[in-house]
Structures are given as C-alpha cells and as structure tokens.
Amino acid sequence: METQVSVWSATRAMILISLGLTTIIGPAHAHTMLRPFQNRTASHSGAFLDPRVGFFSTSENFNQSGTRTPVADQVTNTRITLDVNLTYGVTDDWFLFGRISSLSSRISNPAGTGERSAFNLSDQLIGSSFRVLSDSAFSLNVQAELTLPAYSNESAALSGSPYMGDGTIDVTGGLFAEIPVDSAGELLVEIGGGYTHRSKGFSSAIPWSALFKRDPVRSGFLFEAGMMGQVSLNTDANATQGTLLAASAVERARGAGMLGGSDGSYLLQGINPAFLMIAAKAGFKTKSGTGFYASGAFPISGTNVPFGVSATIGALFDLSAPAARAEETMPAKNAARSRPGTRVLLTPERRFRSYDLEAKVTSYNDSLYLVKIDKGAAEMVENGQLFDIFSGTGQEPIARAQVSYVRADEAALTVLEYYQDTWIEKGSIARRVVR
Image (cartoon, rainbow, N blue to C red; front, side):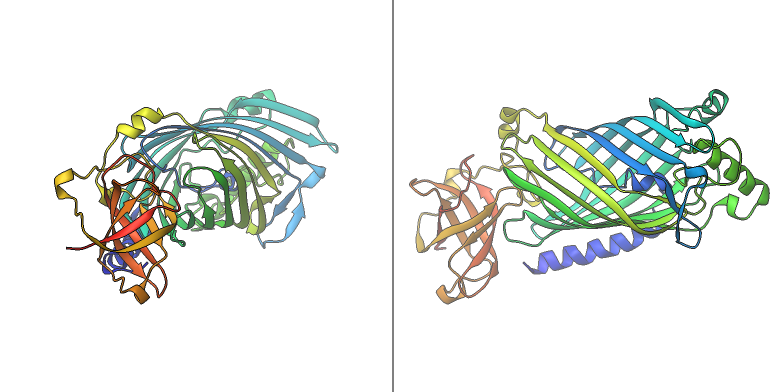
C-alpha cells in the first residue's frame, strides 16, 4: 500500500538506515555465526521469555582464501549452547533485553590430546531496542547491545580446559526495517544491518541479515528464511603485527585442544572473519502467545571462520497478563506491529449513522490494524473514505477504518479507532460512512 505518508516514511527510513550504518558504533566475531545480530523487538509491551538449545560441530575452516580445509590433527570442536533470552517491553515501542548463556564444549583430538570437555558460562548479552518509525507500511527499529564474557581463557589454559570464546567485550548497534508484503501484515520482509566494535584489537565488522518471515497475528505456523552474514572491516591488529599474529595462532590452537602449533579452529581468534550463510526457522504459535520452533544455518562461504551446520530448538512465552493487555490503550499512529487489545475507543457522539455501501471483510490483521474488503474502485471506493466495521451479526459498529489502497474489486483499510474492544474477524461487515 503506497500512500503519500507511507512513501515519505519509507524514504525517511532509508535515509536513517544509511546514516545509521555509518555512524552507530557496535561488535563482530566468528561466533556471530552461532548467535547472529537479530531483531529483539516484540509485538507489544510486557515480558517475553525465549529459551533455546543450540548445537554446532566443526572439523573444518574457511581459510584466508575462502577454501574449506580440515582443522589440523583431525580436531573436532562440538558446542552445545543453552541460552535464556528475556525481552521486556517498557512500552509498545521501547524494549530492553538480555541473554544468560552457558556452553558445553567438547574437543576431540585423536592425534594429540584425546578428548576434553568443559561446561561454563559463555558470552552474556544486554541491550535495548526502540521502534522509531511505525505505520501500516513500514516499521524501523534502532538497536544497541553489549556482549560480555563470563569466563576466563587464562584459567582454561592453566587447567587445560577448552576455551568458551575469545574473551572480548563487544558493542553492536544497528537498524532493522520490517516491511509487510500482504494486506494482513503477517508476511514480512526484514532487513537488518549494523556496526560491530570489539576489544583487544579484534576486527570491527558489519553484521547484516535479509529475511522473509511469517509472523501469525493470533496463532498458526511461523517461519523465517533468508541470508545472514558479516563483512569484516579488516581492522584486526593481529593481521599487521607479527608478534600478535603468532600469539593469536597459539591461542587458536589452545582453544581447539592443540597444545601449541599454529593452527586450530577459527571458532576462536579468527583474523578478520567474514561469512555468508543461509538461515531458516519454522514453528507454531498458539493463541496464548506460546510458541515452539526449530532453526538452522548453513555457511556457504567465508574467510577465517569455521564451517559447520548449526541447529537450534526453542520456545516462546508471552508472560504478559492477557487481562492487562486488554485494558491498555495507545494512539493508533503507533499501532503497527502491536498486539490486539491495545485499542483507542471512539466516543459514541463521534459516530456516523448513515451508510451508502456495504462490503464484506475478506482478511484482517489486528496487529497492523489492517482490513481488506471485497469492494473496490468498481463500486467507487476511493482512498480516504471512511468505513465502519460491524460484526457479522451485531448492529453496533466495532471500529472506524479509512481506505488506504484500492484495486478494481478490493480495497485495504487502516483502522483508525475502535468503538468496542472486540476482534475484527473475517466475514465482518464494512459500511461506507456518508459525511
């Protein structure tokens, strides 16, 4: 739907994206393959819990030239992660989030040290996301996050245990744009990008993603599919200083369970790592907001990063009380991607009672406040006209909507305000208001 407002909003968003990618300071590392930079906003305010279990195993690297090569000494690095993600929406546009992460690492080295394993905390995450633009055709979120190591590689080296990570402090900032591609607003294109800065002289980078998603409004199947990647800015201090480069190679070998040597898994101490991978996710969401999903990612190219297929299973829990959500109100202009129940009720004296055209609702999306009807330009439906929406059997109107997009035999309407705190459903009646 392209109205003057939505086109201008999209234009502003593209300008902000261009500025943001060049000015927002943020983190990049090989582990981005396992825990990528992702959109942390939710559909509405309140608390959300997302526990995940991930699996990754590698015995190969993408080397400096991008060629897949085995890790020396037949080393295999297997990681099982347990992440507990918590997101809290202070408002429908401002979210705080964090991640408590633990890791079970097992290294098999048949040609050297045999098998070693360790279980410990890994890299923890805190951050915030804010929806700066929101209308029926576009949503733009600004996000910043901080990754902190909760382990010591020095202690692991003394005990001979596998390393949990690089031990760096990482700061990431970026933007995520969501563009609905259907009138119901359940199908979305999400494009994200940012800037990553790391401590200890490790390379900065630009993480990015492009995903096609289905996010059901009430319940149903959810999925994501697309590409994710990281572009290194080639600022790694080790790449230009021989002493640091040699020390990094030793640390990489130790982290991979090899006592000495100059090789190892690029899961650790990768120099200027970059990659491109295919990612997919599928699951189901219930009416209560609880969901379950499985996801996976497969790298198709890279430099100085490990090669291996990662898999994750997880659950989604909406901890917000349904009764509390139903009592919330918010301006309709901020309604994009909000959960049904956050409505503005129209006072009775502002209602119109005369109508000259009746249509049927063929699809709806309470999350994006969008309604599609079965009448269009052939019946003189035009942009800007007002319709009152009625339930299939009710005599009192539910909501007021305005035409925002018209075809010959159908039209899309944006809900402006509500008369009742009641769902709009397929089969509801839309009547055009006579001014």
